[in-house]
View 1 (cartoon, rainbow, N blue to C red):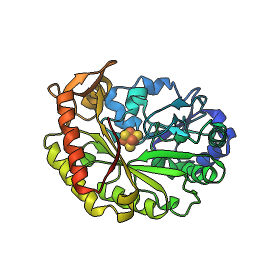
View 2: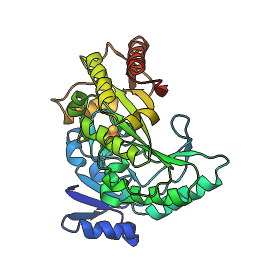
View 3: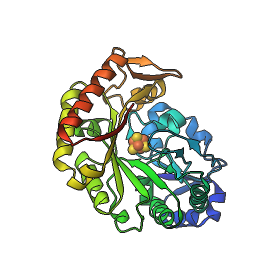
View 4: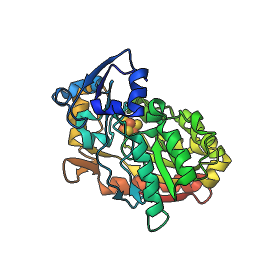
Length: 331
Ligand code: SF4
């Protein structure tokens, strides 16, 4: 991973990970900051500088450790070892939280974050599933920190319940020989290649993601697939038809037997639109007045009639192509 500059909280260098990153990136400029949450010179940049901002890496200390209850594919959302991302999906949900400052931030207090997770899993009233990837893409982060290897093995040995995370990346080889003890659930996010190329900028190709989930399943991980986010580009029905055909042909027998499926429709927002218009003037426009309606706080979702039609179509294609597909939700 190549970064142009690093902004860092000096306290981060008191941690082993901070030191490791200092050595690894010693040939680029390091600029001290007081807080990773508020870097004034970056906050003041224009929306058109979004692509440039994504080339920076931020290193700080995570101060919030509050778990939030969740009722989808996990019981708790865990503030984990990073937030933000170096890729640039045009709809990225993190932009809603961080606006144009959705660059990758790594937290140097990773040891505490991981041991806290294990303690909480042991103390939880019931066996629970902990979503550790709701704030970044951990396969990508793992390329820099190795945190994912660490949490998979430590949770596998001492944790109770499960950890889970979604990804759009295929760099999974380092995970295949880990002692996960069946406690890690990896969910691969999939979309038609056309959407990946045009909209999910900087992520892995569809075929590489499919190969990655096949390998992970072979390595004994519990697996799921996310068809997400479903986006109504011009010929969306044809594209999702082809995607499901491809999944039928390329997912391994084992994945097809064991996977669960989540389907999520795109949520877009005023903030995305403002950034994309400035930073990606030549890319596909995702806001569509006819198909979308407002949903509080400047967000847009697809109108019910279009969404319902698409849900029916996707469910029907999944049912035609897989034996009793385990679709856990469509939202
Ligand atoms: S890979 Fe995930 S976290 Fe990264 S930009 Fe895309 S949607 Fe956002």
